[in-house]
Image (cartoon, rainbow, N blue to C red; front, side):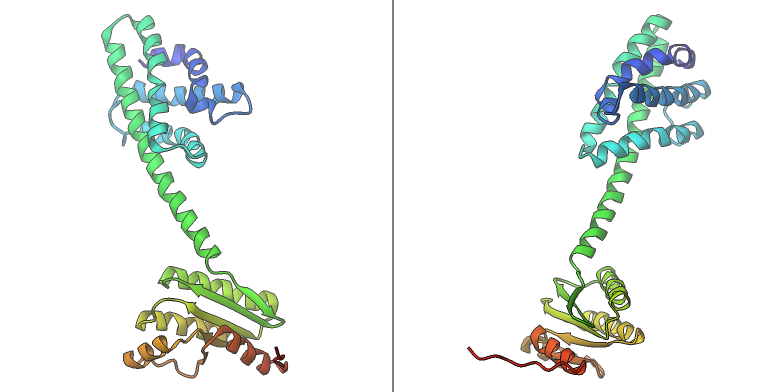
Length: 271
C-alpha cells in the first residue's frame, strides 16, 4: 500500500484533483488542486508505511490532519454540510482502489486501501465537527456584538438599548463595547436602556450594577432607563439595592436627564 502511494502518488493526486472535495475548494486552477491532493497522498504514504491504518490517534495521522483541515474548513465555510464533506471524501476511495488493484493484483492491497480511507473519513468527521463548533462560537460572538450596539445620542452621551435575556457572556460584551465607546467618543454620560429586557432578577441586577460601576471607573456617569412599574415592583420585592445609580422610566427621560447634566436645555414644543 505504501509503495503504491509513493510510486503512483502523482497519478492518484491527478484523479483526486478532479473530484468535488478538491475541485470545490481550489477553484482558481487545477494545479492548486493537484498540489493539495499530492500533499495528502504523501502523508498517507507515511501512514501506510508505519501501519496502524485504523488508528486515528497514530502519530502519522497527526500529520494528516493539517492537510485535511485546510480543505475541510474551506468546504465548511462555503456552506457544505458534514454529510456532504464525508460523501466527498468517500469518493476518493474509488480511484485509489482501482490504482491499487492494478499495481498489486491482490486482495491485501485493496483491504488496506479500504481501511485507510475509512479511517480518513473518521478523521474528516472529527475535523468537521470541530470546525462546526468553532464556527458556531464565532457566529454567536458576532451576534452578541450586533445585538448590543452602542448608540451616540448626543455629544458626550451614549446609550446601549438592551433587548432580550442578559447573561454573563452578553454582559461582558456590553461592558466592553460601552467602555470603548466612552473612550472613543469622550462621553461623560452613558445610558443603559432595559426597556427590551423582559425580566430583572437578582442576577440581572448584578450585571447592571457591575456595568454601571465600570462606567463610573471610566469617569462617566451612568443612568439606567426602562424601569417599568413591573420591573420596579420586582426590584423592591427582591430587595435589590441599586445603590445611588440613577434610574428613569423611559429612554427619553434618561436622555433629558443626561442633557441636563451636560448643561443642555431641553424645550418641548407644542403640537
